[in-house]
Amino acid sequence: MLEMGEPRVWDAMSFDMLCLAEDGAQRVDSDVAWTMRELSPELVDQVMDAVSLLDGDRLRIASCGLVCRQWLPRSRFHVFQYLWLDASRLDSLLTLVETSSSPLLAIVHVVHLDLTVNPLFRLEHLTTLSSTCANLTCIRCTINSPPSEIVPQDFFLETCLPVLGSQCPALTRFELQPTYAETVPLGMITHILASLPALEVFVLLSDSNTIVPTGIVFNSIPARLQSLQLGRTRGICRLFEWLLSLPVLPKLKSLQWLAGPYADADWASLHAYSQRAGVALETLSFCSRTRYDSPDDLEPPPAILGHATKLRVLRLWAESTTRIIPILSSLTSHDLHSIRISLHLQSDHPIPYGEIDRLLARPQFQRLEAFRLEAKNTGLSVLDPPGNEVDTLMPLAYARGIIAFHPEAQEIPFFRKRVVDWSSLFG
Image (cartoon, rainbow, N blue to C red):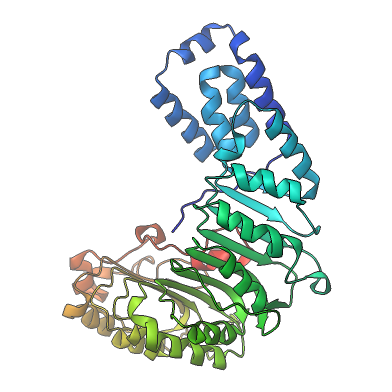
């Protein structure tokens, strides 16, 4: 999965500072600057990368180019690697691109497009972008318009996206975030998938949206599609029914879903898909609860987990303590490396530590490297409270060293934090 840091929003000040650095860095003459010029390129890159990672202030990163010309390439890289564009910024960006002596758009890896003002692009914009963004790996589209203003086949999706898909061979990830939309047309989703032949990851960052069977439905899908990440989305049965109807069934390696309410049909379609393609799944993430105070909300059928015979990573959120044993018993994969379960704790249903410990001792779990139980409200491990003797509660697992007390102990590629408010549920 694509590893990405926080996107840095483009603004004129950052670009102006870089332009100043282009023209004036050679005139900087001080002991400090001279000392910096003596640093090796490798060390300069490491320093710039550290500043970008720890600080994240795009203006400070851009200002590094003013200190010394040697610092300019790496500072330019960090400022232009992630771009956030809306209609008010596009013309200024293109003007800078045309006047710069450096191929700025070749640096861009991720573009976050605000499609609230439609259309964002004109044909001349498209020509420039598609011919120079050769290293573009991800597009994020945010639509903040009211539901009545969302058009499935708008100018960008209908005209621009297929061109970008054909001209940008590294474009492997697409994220759609219809913020206020109550419905997401199935035709829009299938059009996106059909337009991007190199796509590997599709993300629908929705919050209580419903996929509806409207729009022109395409019958093609990227051959390399490996991952679906679905937010609080209802009606995914329509998406999986469409997948099951394709001439060649795509076999996903990763599926993540924050389930919405009234999703019985969705679970049924997901079960049907897992029966035919579950053997390829390596990462599964489910959140079946929709209300914090309801222990009896929807739960994923254990049969879905049983069909994932090559599962490596499992993440379940807001499960009842009574469900842990059935879930672990339903797993059939011998390749599990990581299990993480957030629990809906109930005073009248204690955690069956002993039975869990005995289950994990089965040969089926011999490759398990990290097992974590946490409280859903706090995210803290239930195996690490004050006075909790883990070696007594789960002696076998403790002796193997597989108890994970911290989320970072597990490398689980869930939704990135801070994308939308509820994304932190996935750790």
